[in-house]
Amino acid sequence: MSERIRPIRSATPTPAGKQPAEDALQTLLDGFQRFRNDVFPNQRELFSKLARQQSPQAMFITCADSRIVPELITQSDPGSLFVTRNVGNVVPPYGQMNGGVSTAIEYAVLGLGVQHIIICGHSDCGAMKAVLNPQSIERMPTVKAWLRHAEVAKTVVADNCGCADHSTLGVLTEENVVAQLDHLRTHPSVAARLASGQLFIHGWVYDIENCTIKAYDAERGEFLPLDGETTPSASPRARYLAS
Image (cartoon, rainbow, N blue to C red; front, side, top):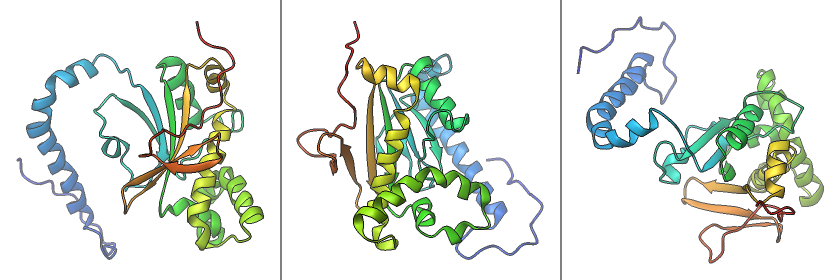
């Protein structure tokens, strides 16, 4: 590889457990070189096709958490998933925020014709911890405003589980996925294709430590293991079958 980059060293002390800034960047650059030299040549035909078009079958909405890698978890090739990530795997209700998530949903459904939309929460979610402890994000006003879209889940847990502390983190994570599924159905493009049976929605919670996924089953109103005999479905029954 070419000579290492020589960025200006920061005078700020490196936080414990982290690489110095210049070493962290070099790690990324080294990774790109390995990808270009070792991985890309073996998948040149795939990338040649992807250079001209994309045709993903599913949209994957998940948390921005660095530990969650949708393509790795699902062992999907590039071009298979249309991924949107944000703090707390939030889907704002239609009309409340004309932002990146809403735009991505509309494009995925109408522009790319995805057949599935998966909303995936995860264990040890920092966003859900912040929902339970809003004082922790007092200095993060935009994060605090964004996570108001998860307040419905917090209220459901508090009113029905009899508590609202960190012991309820797992329950809150699941309820947040359910809440975002409800928000997702307010989007006209989603609602129309759900009604015609052209689109299916799914709610998952991924356990980082144990490599398990629980999926929401709308008919039973509970999360079930994804590796069971049947696949849980969060989709409502289609009312207009597509011709």
